[in-house]
Image (cartoon, rainbow over all chains, first blue to last red; front, side):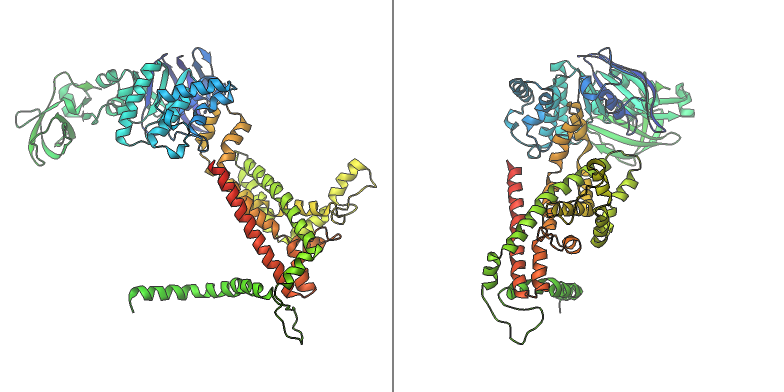
Length: 325
Length: 295
């Protein structure tokens, strides 16, 4: 196990600077999620840890060792790719054992370690199959098996769940979390899905345009976002923003209010608006309210409601739940 | 008339010109040659009418040592040129698939031989092979002394190899382009995964590239073999089947029998046997390679 440290790390592709100078520490044994919109540099950062991208300047350390100029295989990391990147002509057993075979381990030890990884991931009955005969979730597990069998210092995941359907994604999320607590290994995980980030991470790194917006525990980012970008990115549905005169009345130039922190009433609220649309999700209801002078606001309520589009409603932000920027 | 049958009629009308041409130029001659192979048809009509001779042509064919020599030569040519040409094609494709500077230019240049008519290719190589002062002999003389030279085309021990080199050079870009497409079809992250697994360049080729080219290899093996078995133009222009029959291939033998000695019936029998042989070889390759893939 080991920590990962970026020091004054910079990455450019030709004249395009993807990551301007950046410092980041991934603590030993943590599950760190790099999250941000497409093109924010999160995958580049991950691939730089793997050694698949070379640093333009600065340094990367793994477990205190400077690995900036080491080959990918020498860094003691394993990576799970978005497309799984399984070798199509090899069986599951050969796929998982490939790295061990190349490292020249004796056959008996390879067999034992492959069996161990397979049983951890419930793949034992699939060992003689080829990838094309597996479902998406099974392929995903093989890709993870290929990573854990090498006992790496750091696990890297590049959007590993994005090719799975929603229910499988939920299930794999739980399995990944369990895997992390069982192995206690350092894991760095890239996603653009904030639900994955919130549920898996003990440290989230929010990236925007190659810069770190904020680093912190999931609930810390939810409760105390430092920038409007973080506030807007973490939490679902997205936070409401109020600017101008209504914001000034609340004590700031820009005020953020989460949809779950707005009370909706028939009379006597702070703002008056018209219900534009209502979404009934079963366990909760989302109301989209058009407020003159502010714009569209989203309100979230537990359970079902009797709201109707076109209805006049009054909104009041809950005391102590305002985010002032 | 219903719309459907009118559509059908229109389709047939559109197809007709192409079908008539194909029929007249390929299908009819194909069946004609099967028919002719059972007759004593000559190229120029004789006063005596053409007769049906049964399997006489085939019997004579199987007894003709020159035919068997042609079969042997053709097999030798194919056995040499197919691996050689595929090796060159794959090597060039691998180089052109890397992030080479001026890659576009090199790709364009590499296709150059395909643009030349075979007669021009032969003319170029005739100069290269020239005795005693061609470029190849100049290199040879550098090592073996100024008086020494090799008669590449005129000696029966080197004539076939000379044809192999020339033919591979002339047509390798076709296979190279297909390899290039095959290489670009292999997902890049498989190479990255292999890199993380600790595979060096050779191991990445062995475990990712080569298996990834499996279907391309099967296809190229079959079409290159067929192409090799049909060897004619180079022989016809450069060696005329010589020296001493060393480069007489089946098709050149067929041409000699049908045109030089005007025995069209006999030449048709050669064509039928050749056709059956090519189809069997292609099927055999396909079956063997397919079985290998299943295990």
